[in-house]
Image (tube, rainbow, N blue to C red; front, side, top):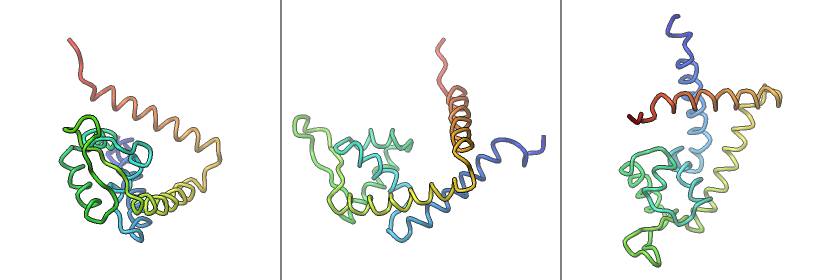
Length: 147
């Protein structure tokens, strides 16, 4: 099979074009897709640690600290010691960060709808189901084996 016909190629091209579209809609809000993803997790899990946020976003702790540093400089997040476990640092959206995230996420939701515009509900459900299966297969391949 020619490389251009492999499943990996189709997934990669779809990922590249959808990420470019996401970057485009977020540009007006002055945030990157990585920052929006971190803010999305924080919107549901306010007060988690940077390490946990990195795991949920599937990036390294170093990458997350860099992302958080940029968000903190803009006043969109704050980091503070955990009230009972002083060695842990909680990460929270500020009011300004929550407001910006809500506006940006509304645009991402519009993009999501636009990407699915030519799919009927059954096709969209099937696409999601198939992508979940591919994701599961990939995770099985990369999962550590126990001996």
